[in-house]
Image 1 (cartoon, rainbow, N blue to C red):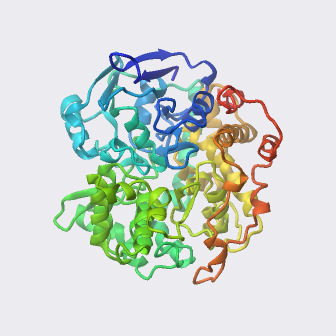
Image 2 (cartoon, rainbow, N blue to C red; image 1 turned 60 degrees about the horizontal axis):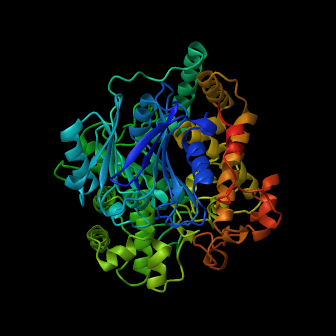
Length: 611
């Protein structure tokens, strides 16, 4: 990947584009790329929906190659939900196709003068930009159906639904899977609203005639890739549990541990958990869709295959296999124990283009406010319909749990950090993930540092979930490692075997080095992660964030959570030590140099890039 595609939406007469050399962004992929561009080129105090913000779409460093699990896509911008820097991650086919097309990033800049919508078509011959008037106002499914009929079914599509067009803060960006369905989403932080603000409805990616990306050292790469894949297959989580039951295998596990947020984070266990568990879901999918329906990859090169296909009672396709977070958000969090209703809600979220975590948390807050009873599945469906129609209530709900819903309806128990809703682990029962929620540059985000592994699963060692000791160090190390993994294009689930199996971690390090033609070490991976977090943290600081934003809502420190009857016990003083390498002192009053936008230049990441 040797070029950047910049699309300027502010050009008089219509959008224009240019292809640039990588320059200081050479050697970057995924999150390293998105965060470096945003930190260097976006004014931290700009309006997220304004002309100055940028949307950066970047495949991972290894995307488009034969590396197993390397098809993740990063989308970055200043978030309209949090007001800080954002990287949202998605599977699907787009990253692999972009990699083979040779683009390290697509950067959407400026803003159209009117409400026109456009589609961008990219293939080996170049780029064209056309009117998207024919798909304006359509959901993601209808949008992709029309695009596939025009351009082809075997292409990759990146689209927004009605929520993105309406610039809602919960809007996602859809990426098509191997069946050309818009089921994989860069969901968090309102990235879909920024794509809508840029006037882009769809990006069409066609890699016909493009070769797979080649490693610098083919033999070493092949051997390392084989060893890495073998490590994934032999691990109990990635080789057995997830292929059989999907990510929703966690429902019974987390519920048993007392960390499954129920009824808007009032309790840690849900009575109906067994009805919506991964085991129950897989059995239902295999019964309705045929054996194997519960085991499927989301992109070519996936060997974990933790997805699947959900059919209704009449054997009609509804949605992809709802993920653990989605099943929790629309299930236990809202008191709903019906998989058919949850699948319908998932389908609607994907079609309108909405983050399932944010919407599930939002409906939970709305239920607490009295708009519906917990457990009322039809009421939840009706609320999502309101969002899709853009009614006044729908626009309130579509802007998230904190941004409007909690304030409008006067609810105190709003489970957010930096205005982003918490995922499916209560921080009182899983204290390490509470530290990640509080301190992540992204707002409440389990994927930023998945402490659930050591806290609950015993993966990569054991740090007791109910005690504050060791949680800050755990979250720090995981956030550093995750930032680096997010830059390679690797699925985050590779963390399970690389934490448990030293030989699998070593294989990954060798794999990266063999691909780029530069020896890698564990230390260089750590330095990359630190450099990425530095860029993100400095952007947030310049946008107005301080260490006082690294806090959980007060109710987690005051209300005990059944069944353990415990509060979140990691102190604020401990939280403030998480980013304790040298650069962090700038947040405590020491002056540091900034570029003209007030954010750290891209150079720190470039110096620790993987090339």
